[in-house]
Length: 380
Image 1: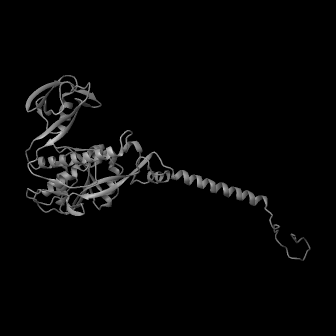
Image 2: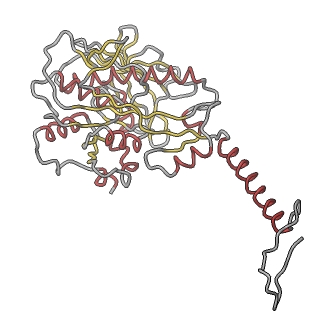
């Protein structure tokens, strides 16, 4: 029984004590409220862990093209030229990669995606950007591996051209689209030698020559078919801002020296620039870097043209994490670079292998790099 102390009562005042088993209305409401909070937390956590339609892209491993790599458990030079004179190198020329968290059937949860959205080191991409519908993971991996092989061949060609070697560089037709300007005129296996008398020795030179010709009149296309030199005519068609023939092409080279590049488990074409710089450094007497650590990325054509790549923002952070204070970025990626450069990293915009080589040599000599372009200059 509850006792109360009233006015004039000399007995001690005692607080109200619920009878055993009693449940005041207020406590019940509190319990209901806390139960609702707990249920909401469980539901929220379950939702956060549900798979999403996104993947997370972040910086991947960094490889020094002047260093070694592991093949079948053995450390071997990443670049090796067995039948030509090579020279000691210093510092590093780092190629950068990106890795993805998630793939079809195993995408990250909403909690991971939310954290990645807030992290400048990472990017959140729709799943279909990296894994297009209708293409199996195995086919995608095979395509990436083929791109890496092609990029290595293009890098060797670009480096040897830069060093003054002369050798055949054939633009070989791999496919002809139906209803395109090339249909019925150019055949699979043809080697495209020229456009309007201008020699073409790379895919980029072919694009440039067609762009210069335009889409109004027939172009004279010099080809080699079954060993015979021929000239055919086709009027390029507009494809966006480009003039095209509607052919798929691939480069074929006959190198004067053997250059071996060994790098496993890396796909895509974006290592071309750094491969080429590594080859040039290996085949020239002075160490280009002067002991500095220089990172970079970019595709490369056999004529030395540097092209754009994906994941440039994540690669900026990868360079910084690898202690490389200098970064070579394709000028075509500069719009993604501006405003996203981490503190402690200096970025140069490059359009050609020759330009990239000049920057590396200037850094190596401790020279003034202020005359080279940054991405601000390109975008501005």
